[in-house]
Amino acid sequence: MANTFLKPTVINRMALKLLQREVVLPRLVWNFGDAEFRGAYGDTVTLRLPAVLAAREYGFRNNRSSEIVIDDLTETSVPVVLDTDLYSAVALTDEQLTLDIVDFSEQVLNPQVSAIARGLEDLIVETMQSATYGTSLNIADSADGMWGTLLDARKALNDANVPREGRVVVVGSEIEREILSDDKFNRVDSVGDGAVSAVREATINRLAGFTIVGSNAIDAETAIAFHPTAFAFVNVAPVVPDGANFGSRMAESGLAMRWLRDYDAPHLQDRSVVSSFAGCSSVEDDGTTNVRAVRINFQGGS
Image (cartoon, rainbow, N blue to C red; front, side, top):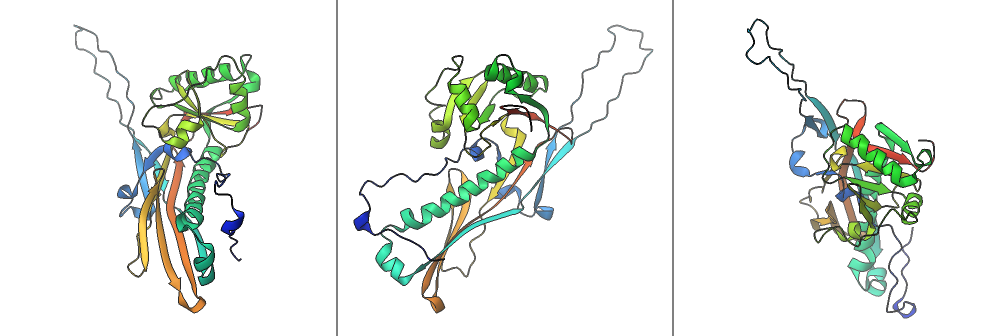
């Protein structure tokens, strides 16, 4: 398929910002890089979840006639598999490079990088949507609407002893509208100086122990309340091959990618390829359900 570029004479000097969704989810989940995966068997890293023990009581100054109870240590594990190879490839003719491309980064590389970033976020969304949750809530079932549902989600995470620090609620556009129309929610303008711009701009609120972030990546009538450790995400930039004319490994919004560029002489065209390896898993402490996250639906249903 041929590329289509607009001539500068028909482009306003103040170009419109590209209409594409902001990528926020990769910064909100548990991230791993290539250091953990080098030499991993089956391209899999196993996350070890420590055993949980209960403190027992032995009678103070008793006659020592009874034995203490010996507990078994039972660790569980969550496999994270590096199993997705995403890429964006573009071919550019001599004519296009000479006459149509004014800024290669702006017109070619940036759209490619954005495509990979959205693809990586989609992988996280697929994991969130398909996960089995210990708790699922419906806003329609709460007399207090989203506010009451958020408190129920907080209670569910508290009851499961999920860490309080770093909790997030990612909401679809319909639930975002519901939140912003509720007087119980007060808007905030930032989530801290160190926040990523896309996350800061998408942040709606900080309430009930959650940072509430809007995302167009998830279903409009869905929200996921979670701790970052609820979802394990791995992202690795492929190695630059020795035979490549030009190649580099780079990071965009914390995401790892590789860029290759070479010339296809038989067809008189340049090629630009951006790619990334990734994988994502739902963390299930008991091996069956994710208790580190709560699924919220606008109405009944899954």
